[in-house]
Image (cartoon, rainbow, N blue to C red; front, side, top):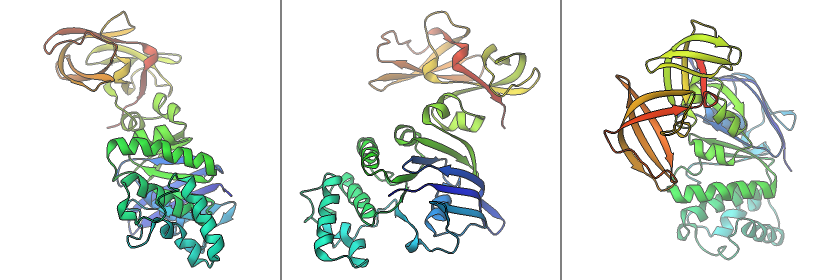
Length: 355
């Protein structure tokens, strides 16, 4: 079973501090939905409000159309996976998975069948007799998922569950989590500050800051078309160039910056004279060819990463531009080389300036 989750004007205050501010959102049944934002932005508080560990000061949480007001965590159709997983170290893998079923009074025979089913679901079919401290980090992660799914929640809540894993294992577990979610069809609500996790796993993402949702959309839409300067800066690497709109021409704007006049898309309809920031991604900047926008620069440090090279360039008197060169690019400028940088107007975004 799966259910939708509706947040209707949810506000959570602690004294004079507002942790979550008027959040309005519907998460569809069976959706993999992520809340993305920096530490302290309110995303974990939202998760706790959905699970019942925090009561909204204002607004309502509805799951499957039912108002959750007055319904405690143990009576909600949710399961929560914490950062530390909270597994029982003295129990076997199978006993950890079956714990919730035993508490609910399920007969041993049926409990064993359900445990075997879940062990196979998370690819741990031959690991049931082991203790959890004998497993790898990724295997313990799968045990936590199986234990949460054992009680057949309609909504599974995950609070940065991959944060303690190393990079390679985190990347592997992203695929594992997404595959498991697709198999079981349960609504997943995922909390993270890692843009890579949110972009690779989610059907949709809500980007948060200071208790408010600033944008909701599919990963590609949020990355390619951020609504505001915070989202543009937080989701992925970017180069912000501050200035003033010189000419606004329909869907385009030309901005006077420290590097000269640069042209980009103008989705917010800024007018001439408006304070603006032109954003361009490092992968959109090139060191060869003719482009709509260009400037002279001096190559600085570079870092080889296998699939790409990160190049830092000094342009103008005090502007640093980050450039991402693909592995196929063999002509990497040496430190101190003069380079001509360019990018297409389509790859630049003009948004209102935020201090």
